[in-house]
Length: 374
Image 1: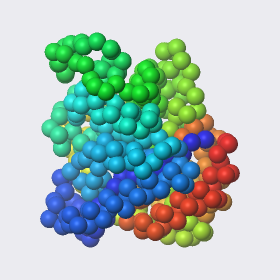
Image 2 (image 1 turned 30 degrees about the vertical axis):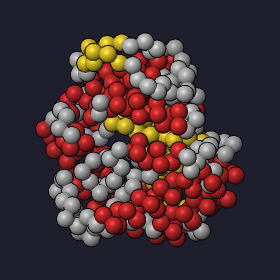
Image 3 (image 1 turned 120 degrees about the horizontal axis):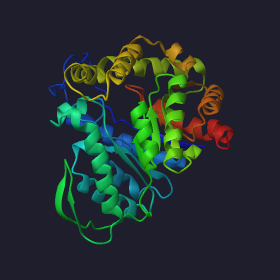
Protein backbone atom coordinates (compact mmCIF):
# COMPACT_ATOMS: atom_id res chain seq x y z
CA UNK A 1 0.00 0.00 0.00
CA UNK A 2 1.27 3.47 -0.90
CA UNK A 3 0.40 6.79 0.75
CA UNK A 4 0.45 10.29 -0.67
CA UNK A 5 0.69 13.50 1.37
CA UNK A 6 -1.42 16.01 -0.53
CA UNK A 7 -1.60 19.75 0.09
CA UNK A 8 -4.08 22.38 -1.10
CA UNK A 9 -2.10 25.28 0.41
CA UNK A 10 -5.20 27.14 1.65
CA UNK A 11 -5.25 30.73 2.90
CA UNK A 12 -6.58 30.50 6.46
CA UNK A 13 -6.96 34.11 7.68
CA UNK A 14 -10.38 35.09 6.36
CA UNK A 15 -13.08 35.73 8.93
CA UNK A 16 -16.11 36.34 6.75
CA UNK A 17 -17.92 33.82 4.62
CA UNK A 18 -17.06 34.28 0.99
CA UNK A 19 -20.22 34.79 -1.06
CA UNK A 20 -18.93 35.74 -4.50
CA UNK A 21 -16.47 34.49 -7.04
CA UNK A 22 -13.77 35.46 -7.81
CA UNK A 23 -12.94 36.09 -4.18
CA UNK A 24 -11.88 39.63 -3.35
CA UNK A 25 -8.28 40.03 -2.18
CA UNK A 26 -9.02 43.04 0.04
CA UNK A 27 -8.27 40.94 3.14
CA UNK A 28 -5.24 39.18 1.69
CA UNK A 29 -1.98 39.67 3.62
CA UNK A 30 1.13 38.71 1.63
CA UNK A 31 3.16 38.35 4.84
CA UNK A 32 0.74 35.72 6.08
CA UNK A 33 0.95 34.05 2.69
CA UNK A 34 4.74 34.00 3.03
CA UNK A 35 4.36 32.21 6.38
CA UNK A 36 1.88 29.78 4.84
CA UNK A 37 4.14 28.84 1.97
CA UNK A 38 7.13 28.26 4.23
CA UNK A 39 5.13 26.13 6.66
CA UNK A 40 3.36 24.15 3.96
CA UNK A 41 6.53 23.34 2.03
CA UNK A 42 8.24 22.28 5.27
CA UNK A 43 5.31 19.92 5.91
CA UNK A 44 5.63 18.49 2.42
CA UNK A 45 9.36 17.90 2.87
CA UNK A 46 8.71 16.30 6.27
CA UNK A 47 6.34 13.83 4.59
CA UNK A 48 9.34 11.87 3.34
CA UNK A 49 10.56 11.36 6.92
CA UNK A 50 7.09 10.15 7.88
CA UNK A 51 7.06 7.31 5.37
CA UNK A 52 4.84 8.80 2.69
CA UNK A 53 5.54 7.46 -0.81
CA UNK A 54 4.24 10.50 -2.71
CA UNK A 55 3.96 14.20 -1.98
CA UNK A 56 1.14 15.82 -3.94
CA UNK A 57 0.76 19.27 -5.50
CA UNK A 58 -2.26 20.69 -7.33
CA UNK A 59 -3.51 23.72 -9.28
CA UNK A 60 -6.32 26.18 -8.49
CA UNK A 61 -7.08 29.78 -9.40
CA UNK A 62 -8.75 32.95 -8.10
CA UNK A 63 -9.58 31.59 -4.64
CA UNK A 64 -8.22 31.15 -1.09
CA UNK A 65 -9.18 27.48 -1.53
CA UNK A 66 -5.64 26.90 -2.76
CA UNK A 67 -2.72 29.26 -3.37
CA UNK A 68 -0.87 26.91 -5.72
CA UNK A 69 -1.55 28.57 -9.07
CA UNK A 70 1.45 26.73 -10.54
CA UNK A 71 2.19 23.43 -8.78
CA UNK A 72 5.40 22.99 -10.76
CA UNK A 73 7.01 25.80 -8.75
CA UNK A 74 6.24 23.89 -5.56
CA UNK A 75 7.48 20.68 -7.15
CA UNK A 76 10.79 22.37 -7.90
CA UNK A 77 11.06 23.49 -4.27
CA UNK A 78 10.61 19.87 -3.14
CA UNK A 79 13.09 18.17 -5.45
CA UNK A 80 16.41 18.73 -3.67
CA UNK A 81 15.36 18.68 0.01
CA UNK A 82 13.96 15.17 -0.65
CA UNK A 83 15.55 12.08 -2.16
CA UNK A 84 13.05 9.20 -2.25
CA UNK A 85 9.50 10.47 -2.17
CA UNK A 86 7.76 10.75 -5.53
CA UNK A 87 6.77 14.25 -6.65
CA UNK A 88 3.10 13.80 -7.54
CA UNK A 89 1.59 16.57 -9.63
CA UNK A 90 -2.14 16.04 -9.08
CA UNK A 91 -1.82 18.10 -11.18
CA UNK A 92 -1.50 20.55 -14.07
CA UNK A 93 -4.83 21.55 -15.65
CA UNK A 94 -3.84 20.86 -19.22
CA UNK A 95 -6.92 22.31 -20.99
CA UNK A 96 -6.04 25.72 -19.50
CA UNK A 97 -2.33 25.63 -20.27
CA UNK A 98 0.10 25.48 -23.15
CA UNK A 99 0.64 21.69 -23.37
CA UNK A 100 4.20 22.11 -24.64
CA UNK A 101 5.04 24.18 -21.56
CA UNK A 102 3.55 21.43 -19.35
CA UNK A 103 5.61 18.80 -21.18
CA UNK A 104 8.78 20.86 -20.75
CA UNK A 105 8.30 21.65 -17.07
CA UNK A 106 7.35 18.08 -16.22
CA UNK A 107 10.43 16.81 -18.08
CA UNK A 108 12.56 19.23 -16.06
CA UNK A 109 11.06 17.98 -12.78
CA UNK A 110 11.57 14.36 -13.78
CA UNK A 111 15.24 14.91 -14.61
CA UNK A 112 15.86 17.12 -11.57
CA UNK A 113 14.28 14.57 -9.22
CA UNK A 114 16.05 11.56 -10.68
CA UNK A 115 12.87 10.12 -12.17
CA UNK A 116 10.45 10.67 -9.28
CA UNK A 117 7.68 12.52 -11.11
CA UNK A 118 4.04 11.39 -11.18
CA UNK A 119 2.55 13.41 -14.05
CA UNK A 120 -1.00 14.50 -13.34
CA UNK A 121 -2.68 15.75 -16.53
CA UNK A 122 -5.96 16.99 -15.13
CA UNK A 123 -9.11 18.42 -16.64
CA UNK A 124 -9.87 20.61 -13.61
CA UNK A 125 -13.07 21.52 -11.82
CA UNK A 126 -15.61 23.75 -13.61
CA UNK A 127 -14.87 27.19 -12.16
CA UNK A 128 -11.22 27.12 -13.30
CA UNK A 129 -12.48 27.64 -16.85
CA UNK A 130 -14.17 30.88 -15.90
CA UNK A 131 -10.91 32.05 -14.33
CA UNK A 132 -8.88 31.44 -17.48
CA UNK A 133 -11.62 32.30 -19.98
CA UNK A 134 -11.57 28.88 -21.62
CA UNK A 135 -14.95 27.53 -22.80
CA UNK A 136 -15.93 24.71 -20.41
CA UNK A 137 -17.61 22.91 -23.31
CA UNK A 138 -14.15 22.42 -24.86
CA UNK A 139 -12.61 20.89 -21.75
CA UNK A 140 -12.82 17.25 -22.84
CA UNK A 141 -11.49 17.88 -26.32
CA UNK A 142 -8.66 20.04 -25.00
CA UNK A 143 -7.62 17.50 -22.37
CA UNK A 144 -7.56 14.59 -24.81
CA UNK A 145 -5.63 16.48 -27.47
CA UNK A 146 -3.21 17.98 -24.93
CA UNK A 147 -2.37 14.55 -23.48
CA UNK A 148 -1.68 13.15 -26.96
CA UNK A 149 0.60 16.09 -27.72
CA UNK A 150 2.43 15.91 -24.38
CA UNK A 151 3.11 12.19 -24.74
CA UNK A 152 4.50 12.69 -28.23
CA UNK A 153 6.65 15.62 -27.07
CA UNK A 154 8.12 13.35 -24.39
CA UNK A 155 8.80 10.38 -26.67
CA UNK A 156 9.47 11.67 -30.21
CA UNK A 157 13.25 12.03 -30.77
CA UNK A 158 12.95 14.19 -33.89
CA UNK A 159 11.26 17.57 -34.34
CA UNK A 160 7.62 17.28 -35.40
CA UNK A 161 4.73 19.55 -36.28
CA UNK A 162 1.27 19.50 -34.71
CA UNK A 163 -1.95 20.64 -36.36
CA UNK A 164 -4.79 19.81 -34.02
CA UNK A 165 -8.19 21.36 -33.39
CA UNK A 166 -7.10 23.34 -30.33
CA UNK A 167 -3.29 23.39 -30.57
CA UNK A 168 -1.00 24.15 -33.48
CA UNK A 169 2.81 24.11 -33.46
CA UNK A 170 5.04 24.33 -36.52
CA UNK A 171 7.89 22.47 -34.82
CA UNK A 172 8.20 20.70 -31.45
CA UNK A 173 11.41 19.32 -29.94
CA UNK A 174 11.54 19.74 -26.18
CA UNK A 175 14.70 19.84 -24.08
CA UNK A 176 15.10 18.03 -21.76
CA UNK A 177 13.26 14.76 -22.29
CA UNK A 178 11.95 12.96 -19.16
CA UNK A 179 14.28 10.55 -17.37
CA UNK A 180 11.55 7.90 -16.98
CA UNK A 181 10.94 5.91 -20.17
CA UNK A 182 8.88 5.97 -22.21
CA UNK A 183 7.56 8.80 -20.04
CA UNK A 184 6.56 9.48 -16.40
CA UNK A 185 3.46 7.63 -15.17
CA UNK A 186 0.33 9.62 -15.99
CA UNK A 187 -2.47 10.25 -13.50
CA UNK A 188 -5.83 11.75 -14.38
CA UNK A 189 -8.97 12.43 -12.39
CA UNK A 190 -11.61 9.71 -12.73
CA UNK A 191 -14.58 10.98 -10.76
CA UNK A 192 -17.16 10.36 -13.50
CA UNK A 193 -17.82 7.26 -15.62
CA UNK A 194 -16.54 9.10 -18.69
CA UNK A 195 -13.28 10.16 -17.07
CA UNK A 196 -12.76 6.70 -15.53
CA UNK A 197 -13.22 5.14 -18.94
CA UNK A 198 -10.77 7.60 -20.50
CA UNK A 199 -8.14 6.87 -17.83
CA UNK A 200 -8.39 3.17 -18.60
CA UNK A 201 -8.22 3.73 -22.34
CA UNK A 202 -4.95 5.69 -22.21
CA UNK A 203 -3.19 3.58 -19.57
CA UNK A 204 -3.25 6.22 -16.84
CA UNK A 205 -3.60 5.86 -13.08
CA UNK A 206 -7.08 6.89 -11.97
CA UNK A 207 -7.49 9.40 -9.17
CA UNK A 208 -10.65 10.02 -7.14
CA UNK A 209 -10.52 12.65 -4.39
CA UNK A 210 -13.20 13.55 -1.85
CA UNK A 211 -15.30 10.49 -2.60
CA UNK A 212 -19.07 10.75 -2.75
CA UNK A 213 -19.42 7.28 -1.20
CA UNK A 214 -17.84 3.86 -1.48
CA UNK A 215 -20.46 2.30 -3.82
CA UNK A 216 -19.94 5.16 -6.31
CA UNK A 217 -16.18 4.72 -6.08
CA UNK A 218 -16.52 0.98 -6.70
CA UNK A 219 -18.54 1.67 -9.85
CA UNK A 220 -15.91 4.10 -11.16
CA UNK A 221 -13.21 1.50 -10.55
CA UNK A 222 -15.25 -1.13 -12.41
CA UNK A 223 -15.63 1.18 -15.42
CA UNK A 224 -11.91 1.98 -15.32
CA UNK A 225 -10.83 -1.66 -15.21
CA UNK A 226 -13.16 -2.66 -18.03
CA UNK A 227 -11.85 0.14 -20.24
CA UNK A 228 -8.25 -0.81 -19.44
CA UNK A 229 -8.82 -4.45 -20.30
CA UNK A 230 -10.48 -3.45 -23.56
CA UNK A 231 -7.36 -1.39 -24.29
CA UNK A 232 -5.15 -4.41 -23.66
CA UNK A 233 -3.70 -3.85 -20.21
CA UNK A 234 -4.46 -4.81 -16.61
CA UNK A 235 -4.38 -2.10 -13.91
CA UNK A 236 -2.47 -2.87 -10.73
CA UNK A 237 -3.67 -1.71 -7.31
CA UNK A 238 -1.12 1.11 -7.55
CA UNK A 239 -3.10 2.45 -10.53
CA UNK A 240 -6.08 3.28 -8.27
CA UNK A 241 -5.78 6.35 -6.06
CA UNK A 242 -8.45 7.52 -3.64
CA UNK A 243 -8.27 10.80 -1.73
CA UNK A 244 -9.54 11.67 1.74
CA UNK A 245 -9.60 14.57 4.15
CA UNK A 246 -7.61 13.12 7.04
CA UNK A 247 -7.00 13.88 10.70
CA UNK A 248 -5.04 11.57 12.98
CA UNK A 249 -4.80 12.53 16.65
CA UNK A 250 -4.21 10.81 19.98
CA UNK A 251 -7.92 10.10 20.48
CA UNK A 252 -11.05 9.88 18.36
CA UNK A 253 -12.57 12.86 20.17
CA UNK A 254 -9.54 15.05 19.55
CA UNK A 255 -9.37 14.11 15.88
CA UNK A 256 -13.07 14.82 15.38
CA UNK A 257 -12.74 18.16 17.15
CA UNK A 258 -9.99 19.37 14.81
CA UNK A 259 -11.60 17.90 11.71
CA UNK A 260 -14.93 19.51 12.54
CA UNK A 261 -13.25 22.89 13.05
CA UNK A 262 -11.24 22.59 9.84
CA UNK A 263 -14.23 21.45 7.78
CA UNK A 264 -16.28 24.41 8.98
CA UNK A 265 -13.80 26.85 7.45
CA UNK A 266 -13.30 24.65 4.40
CA UNK A 267 -17.01 24.41 3.63
CA UNK A 268 -18.14 27.94 4.53
CA UNK A 269 -15.14 30.01 3.39
CA UNK A 270 -12.81 28.09 1.10
CA UNK A 271 -15.50 26.24 -0.86
CA UNK A 272 -18.15 28.95 -1.02
CA UNK A 273 -16.73 31.01 -3.87
CA UNK A 274 -15.81 28.01 -6.05
CA UNK A 275 -19.19 26.44 -5.26
CA UNK A 276 -21.00 29.52 -6.55
CA UNK A 277 -18.84 29.56 -9.68
CA UNK A 278 -19.53 25.87 -10.26
CA UNK A 279 -23.26 26.51 -10.10
CA UNK A 280 -22.86 29.09 -12.87
CA UNK A 281 -21.01 26.56 -14.98
CA UNK A 282 -23.65 23.92 -14.34
CA UNK A 283 -26.43 26.29 -15.33
CA UNK A 284 -24.92 28.09 -18.28
CA UNK A 285 -22.31 25.93 -19.97
CA UNK A 286 -21.70 22.47 -21.36
CA UNK A 287 -18.86 21.30 -19.11
CA UNK A 288 -20.54 17.94 -18.52
CA UNK A 289 -20.95 15.32 -21.22
CA UNK A 290 -24.66 14.78 -20.63
CA UNK A 291 -27.49 15.70 -18.29
CA UNK A 292 -26.84 12.66 -16.10
CA UNK A 293 -23.29 13.86 -15.42
CA UNK A 294 -24.56 17.36 -14.69
CA UNK A 295 -27.13 16.01 -12.24
CA UNK A 296 -24.56 13.82 -10.47
CA UNK A 297 -22.35 16.85 -9.84
CA UNK A 298 -25.27 18.98 -8.66
CA UNK A 299 -26.32 16.33 -6.15
CA UNK A 300 -22.73 15.94 -4.99
CA UNK A 301 -22.48 19.67 -4.24
CA UNK A 302 -25.75 19.58 -2.31
CA UNK A 303 -24.91 16.42 -0.38
CA UNK A 304 -21.51 17.63 0.76
CA UNK A 305 -22.96 20.60 2.63
CA UNK A 306 -25.61 18.52 4.39
CA UNK A 307 -23.33 15.63 5.37
CA UNK A 308 -22.26 15.59 9.01
CA UNK A 309 -18.74 14.59 10.00
CA UNK A 310 -20.06 11.39 11.55
CA UNK A 311 -21.95 10.56 8.35
CA UNK A 312 -18.86 11.15 6.26
CA UNK A 313 -16.76 8.88 8.48
CA UNK A 314 -19.42 6.16 8.37
CA UNK A 315 -19.61 6.42 4.57
CA UNK A 316 -15.87 6.01 4.28
CA UNK A 317 -15.24 9.41 2.70
CA UNK A 318 -13.13 10.85 5.54
CA UNK A 319 -10.31 9.35 7.60
CA UNK A 320 -10.55 10.65 11.14
CA UNK A 321 -9.65 9.31 14.57
CA UNK A 322 -6.94 7.84 16.72
CA UNK A 323 -4.21 5.83 14.97
CA UNK A 324 -6.03 2.61 15.84
CA UNK A 325 -9.31 3.94 14.41
CA UNK A 326 -7.66 5.18 11.21
CA UNK A 327 -5.99 1.79 10.71
CA UNK A 328 -9.44 0.20 10.80
CA UNK A 329 -10.81 2.81 8.38
CA UNK A 330 -7.96 2.26 5.92
CA UNK A 331 -8.38 -1.51 6.05
CA UNK A 332 -12.12 -1.20 5.48
CA UNK A 333 -11.74 1.09 2.46
CA UNK A 334 -8.89 -0.90 0.91
CA UNK A 335 -10.94 -4.07 1.37
CA UNK A 336 -13.99 -2.58 -0.36
CA UNK A 337 -12.24 -0.67 -3.17
CA UNK A 338 -9.00 -2.55 -3.78
CA UNK A 339 -7.11 0.72 -4.22
CA UNK A 340 -3.34 0.80 -3.85
CA UNK A 341 -2.80 4.51 -3.08
CA UNK A 342 -4.36 6.61 -0.31
CA UNK A 343 -4.10 10.34 -0.89
CA UNK A 344 -4.28 12.24 2.44
CA UNK A 345 -5.34 15.89 2.54
CA UNK A 346 -4.10 16.53 6.08
CA UNK A 347 -4.34 20.34 6.14
CA UNK A 348 -8.12 20.77 6.09
CA UNK A 349 -9.20 24.40 6.31
CA UNK A 350 -7.96 26.00 9.52
CA UNK A 351 -6.74 22.79 11.10
CA UNK A 352 -3.69 23.94 13.13
CA UNK A 353 -0.31 23.14 11.61
CA UNK A 354 0.79 21.64 14.92
CA UNK A 355 -2.08 19.16 14.62
CA UNK A 356 -1.08 18.41 11.03
CA UNK A 357 2.52 17.69 12.03
CA UNK A 358 1.52 15.55 15.01
CA UNK A 359 -0.85 13.61 12.78
CA UNK A 360 2.03 12.95 10.36
CA UNK A 361 4.13 11.58 13.23
CA UNK A 362 1.29 9.37 14.43
CA UNK A 363 0.84 8.09 10.89
CA UNK A 364 4.52 7.16 10.72
CA UNK A 365 4.72 5.53 14.16
CA UNK A 366 1.30 3.98 14.76
CA UNK A 367 -0.59 3.73 11.47
CA UNK A 368 1.87 2.90 8.70
CA UNK A 369 3.34 -0.25 10.34
CA UNK A 370 -0.15 -1.81 10.37
CA UNK A 371 -1.24 -0.93 6.81
CA UNK A 372 1.92 -0.92 4.70
CA UNK A 373 1.53 -4.56 3.68
CA UNK A 374 -2.21 -4.57 2.92
